Image 1 (cartoon, rainbow, N blue to C red):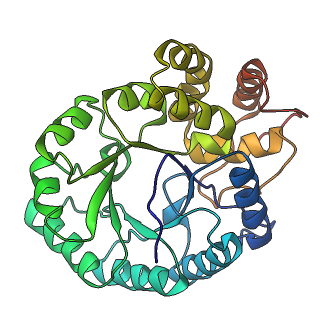
Image 2: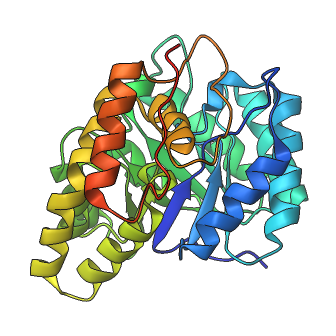
Length: 304
């Protein structure tokens, strides 16, 4: 039986070896670090995991490794978005066979999709599996905006009942919550606005920032959910500079660089994505040090 996604769900970066292959051993250590920090769930191949950088076979292999290693300690969600519906279906079926608890599907496309195409795409994927399917709306990166009226039609599908919402308009959280009360679970999907989205009613937080400051992310979520608004706001004022910086510089670059800074290297993103420049790495290191309890052994990162 699958486990529900709740709380703070970390969007894992995808560690690589020197030749650019996925580093399964480091991926497992990263999962252990996140679980030890109190993270409530893990996602493989979200945006922070550079979903578009790896082949279908690589994604299948990494899913097998992570699900087997986590062994039910926390729920595991696999990002199965793909350029074609057929590939997304194959990846989703594999995630189910591997023992994942849910799939996350972002619309990856070159041509912008119509509402009818989006509906058909998601319904085909959901109909091919029994796992919960979380919608992923990230128009800033995908170019496709899952509008509320489309989401409302998709939640009529039995295993579609959650969304990672990363639309620029924060009111999207309120709009969806009012349109679909009790029918749609909304997860904050923009790290740089996580506090605001949680305060507006998001039930969970799907976070790339958790690769850098997992304990702080967990604490922020717990404070908001516990109604300790003043304490949550104070923590957010400390955490938000990193969230804003990583948004502006790119989470994939920033998270790989942060692992170097923390003395727990996870390789480099697969080209053409790189790590941060030396100047940006120094800025990130300063922000992490100022936050505290993040970079116990800071070290400089070489420029690209």
